[in-house]
Amino acid sequence: MATVKKRPASTRSSRRAAEQEKFQFPLTKTNFLILGFGVLVLVAGYILMAIPEHPDDFLTRTLAPVMLVFSFLVIIPFGLMYKEKKKDSDS
Image 1 (cartoon, rainbow, N blue to C red):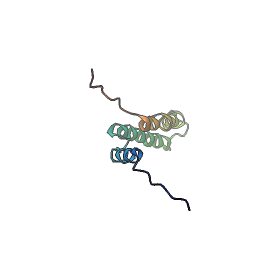
Image 2: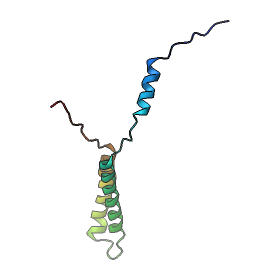
Image 3: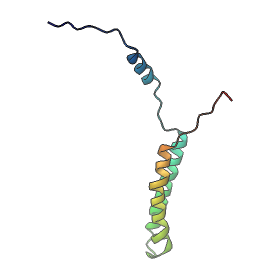
């Protein structure tokens, strides 16, 4: 029968353990503020769209859809992808 050779603990497993201990949630306070602003713009857009007085008004037919599209396609993705620049302590 074949024998199985045991390898000594590799440095990969120790690196993985060190990386798992250093895990930090990728979204910061700034990200959440941007996402919150995006949600506020969404809510405002839906409220403007729901104004029943004049369905052919500028707010209902033009501004509200533009606000919704801008929030869904610009603000929220920006809030998810934004990363603060690290300051160099060498300078």
